Amino acid sequence: NTRTGRFSPMTVGGPGNAQQWLIDSKGVPRCCVSYTDETFTVHFRAAEDAPWTAIYSYRDDDTAEAIKPQSIAPDGRIYVVANNGNDTSGLYAFDPKTRKLDPTPVFAVKGFDADDIDLLWDRSEGKLLGISYEAIEPGTYWIDEERAALQATVDKALPETVNAIQVGGAGDDRVVLISSSSDRDPGRYYLYQVKQDKFQGLGATRPWVKVPEMRPTTFFRYTARDGMQIPAQLTMPA
Image (tube, rainbow, N blue to C red; front, side, top):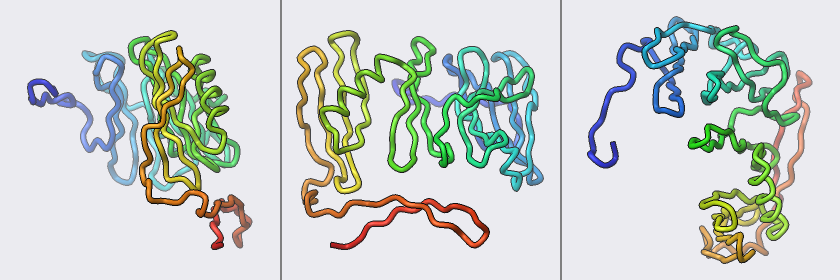
């Protein structure tokens, strides 16, 4: 509790050797991952007073069968990162009742694993707004149409950079904090007032960097001896 400074145990009675915990929108631990004898096991409970049940296990060297829990959906499903029979991983919904993955991913980027993603929630409405990810460059896939429209407006105004947005307020009173960066620009911040359609510069993270003098980065893939395609980025000197 940040107001009282007191800590309250939340995982008493849960599975042993836990490596990861997930809580639901009400702050209740509902899912955890334990590790014993080179095996990961995913545990789940339907409610705070329900018993913990092992719902999935895989060997730590079996990446093809691995699932990595990310978040709990309002309907009780678990969002997980998994390959699900593919060469690269994506975000899937896992049903703890049937213990099966949905065949269609919630999100995937062709040619890239979905290991470094962040699910963006509106917890007040229990709504998944979007997913931030890493690929050739960072980006955000917006499920929410309003956020997608805001992102399009910001990207049109700042076309040379990757723009991560955080939104406060509602309707025309919305204010958007923008973190803008590129392969040449370490980053700078802007404030966008939706009602006034006005952008305001707030500052740069490293103002001493001379952006016009920085070299661009090129993305490419090369083939390893076993035929696997390896992604890489290259920055050439001037």
